[in-house]
Amino acid sequence: MQRRTVLSMAGATGGMLALSGCLSNGGLFGSNDRINKNGEIAITVDGESFETKSQFQSENVDNESAAFHLHESNGRWYMEGKEPVTVAEGIDLLPSFEFEMASGTPVMTIDGTEYDAGEPGTEISFRLDGEEIDPTEHEPSDGDELVVEITTEEEGEEAESEGEDAANVSDETESDSENGNEDENETAAVSAASAVSNGND
Image (cartoon, rainbow, N blue to C red; front, side, top):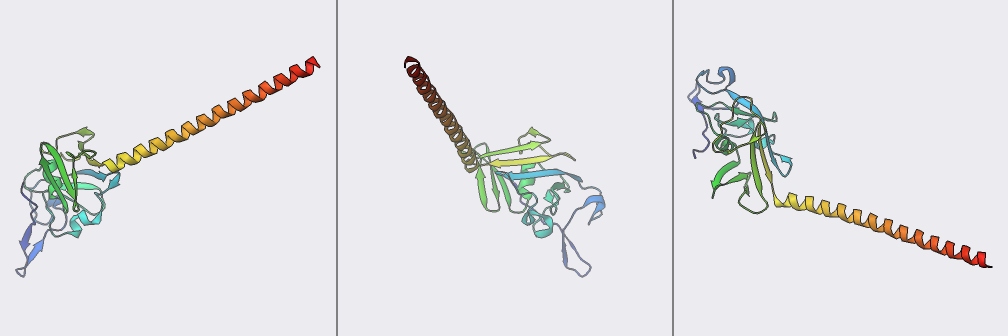
């Protein structure tokens, strides 16, 4: 897979001007032959959002790609290269992100941390406008909402622990209720025996 490319142009003094920002409406290069697509994006790991973190935005890195990039804190993806890219290729072009397929399952690395869907307890899903897709085959269209969701065993263990705690509380409440009923029954039995005894007297 071709890695991210830094676009540059010669400045008036012979220096190089790095791309920083969008090419929308002709943009930096005044070119009309480039793609101009964008849409909402959400990238989460165990519920934590990554798409708006500053280290992944074009404004804050020097290896951004016009083909697929993010802009600071607006939660949108931008595709402005000469050729469209698939979701997988786009994710791989983001700063500090990597994507690959290993034995038919997706593997993502975010800021040095690897998430392998082939490992027990780790799941990676990709959705465009709510429909689950194969990221290696689908190209996002203008306006598409892209959701990348990663869940790990750690999150599952926390949910399971919370469920067990709730079950324990329920069992304790039920046990207390049963004990209360037993106490009431014993009290009623004693009262009845006492009434019988008094009647015989």
